[in-house]
Structures are given as structure tokens and as C-alpha cells.
Image 1 (cartoon, rainbow, N blue to C red):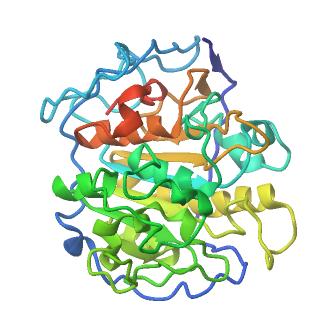
Image 2: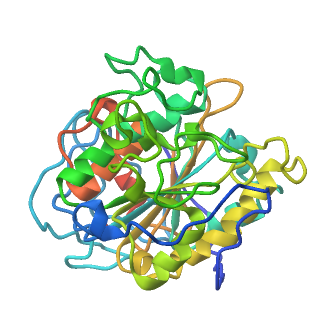
Length: 387
């Protein structure tokens, strides 16, 4: 396994607001109703345990960038060790002492192989980002180890580290909206674990109305790209647009900028661009350059997150794609954080969406490890401070 170190480039980007892509996405309306007080514990986000049990060895950085003094190692399936308030140390980059990741932002793009993105002229912003001081990336990151497609099972996998439940019979493969038959009563997923620990979580999606449960696809908004709404403890049984356990966690993407400015930020935020802005493409989108439109969307919106206190003081952004196209090939994972090894650091360790679930669990001290998360590496090698 190899690690790669690219030349250092400084990216200077500023933004004063969010530019939502002009795809005619319906109804980014609604204010900031349903704030963190309604989310069961507020946005404290303090991690209560540091991870020590990832399968396989971690690749090491080549010379020139910050080195990690604590890459993950150990046997597959090891659970995160739970020392409350454990400190994380760094031998280069990030903050030392008790600093740790407190706020996680997951951004899901659509249907592109890493080979379509890396060094592509269609994605200049992403490729510039890869060499920046706070970005690390994985070149051997795959969707789900069961090779299940299309989109919906991959989004569900990112919430539960599986898409198979005893009461569902894998109907998530239909890419259907939530229903009594296309949902599960399982409580073994991230939102439930976060709520039980008193940590806040939110969905930010283009094309939905804040405070309602978006269980019906419309315009450029697709339900299959919002994983939480396929779990009945969130959406109710049967799923309902007025579910009291769902609405307070659902926000139009246009609300995110104001939340970041005011400091009203959840511990865990899942961000869903619409079908035009996520590289998926759809009827009604402006043109057919899906990769470039998604790249531009990131260029317009990522600096807004990175300029916030929530990011600067313990933030980590994870950017990946839902699934590969034309076979099981890497889709890539980009980590952006003050705690990332950064400066072009990359590795070739094999990861899956289960690795992201495991990483989130270890950051927030959520146990037990969910389904396949217990079998896969976490993403700690991409950080100099973890968790």
C-alpha cells in the first residue's frame, strides 16, 4: 500500500453567501424553524472516545507534509475505545492537547468514478482542493461491499452500514420513496445513536421545505438521496410528512449559511445537493456537464462551511460519491479538516461506505459499531488528529 504526497498549493477562497444552483429546485423555503433545541441535546458534539481498532495497517505520509504519530492499527472489527474526553495528540498539523473533531459534515455527490474526477479538467475546484493544506483523500474508497445498486441502498448504507433488514427484504434497491413497505423499523442507525447520546443531527437538502418530513420526491429533489427518511423511528409508521420525530431535523439547504453564521450547528450534518448540483443530472438541468456543475456547486458552497467557527474549531467535512458506474471501482473520498494531514496526503487503503459510518461512530463515541462498520477500516489515517 502506498501513500502519495502532492506538491503544496494554497487555495484562497471566500464567500459571503450560498449560491444555490439554478436548476429550478422546488421550494427552498421555510426559515430556521426546528433549531437544535428540538434535536435532543443541542450541538455539543463532544467526542467521548478515541478509536483504536481498525483493520489492517495505515499507510504513512511521505516526506514534506505533517506526519501522524497515531495511525490506526489493530485487528478488523475492533471497537472504539471509550475513554471519556480522551485527548488527541499531533506531531505535525492540527491542534494539540485536547482538541478533537466535534462537528461532522457529510456531502454526497452522485454517480462518478474517481477516475472521472481525479485530474479531470471538468473538476478544477476539486483537484485544486486536493493539494490544499487541510485536505486529505483516499483513492481506493468504494461504495458498499455488497455491490448493491442503485443510489438508495448506498445512502441507507451510509446511515446504517448495511441495506438489509429483516423487515425490508432489500426493497431499497427500487429507488422508491419511503412507504410502509419501503422502510424499516430498525433502530440500528446513526441518527438513533446520536439522539440517544444527546447529540444533534440534521439533513440539509436542496428542494425541501424546512420543518417537514420530505417523503415525496419533487422536481430536482429525490427522496432516495436522504437516508434518514427510510427509518420508521424517524418518519413514523407509515412514513408521514408531518412526523414529529422527522421534521425538526430537516432543513432546506439555503438555511445552512445562516446556521453557520449564528453558530446554530448540529454535531452531524448530512448535505444533499439536488439532482443538478450533485453530478447526477436530470431533465430540466442547465446543460449536460454534470461534473462541472457539481464542481462549481462545491466551489460556491464549501468555503461557506470552512469559514465558520463550527469548522475552524473542530470541524471535519467528508465528500464522496454514492456509487460507482460501470462496475465496482473506486469512487474516492475527500476529507477536509483543520485536523487532516493535508498538503496533498493520500493513501491507497481500501475503504467502503462502512468506513465512513465507523469513522462517525468513533468521532462521537457511538456504540455498538453498526453492521459492516465493525468489519472495515476507519478513515483515521487521513487525519493527524483523530478523533
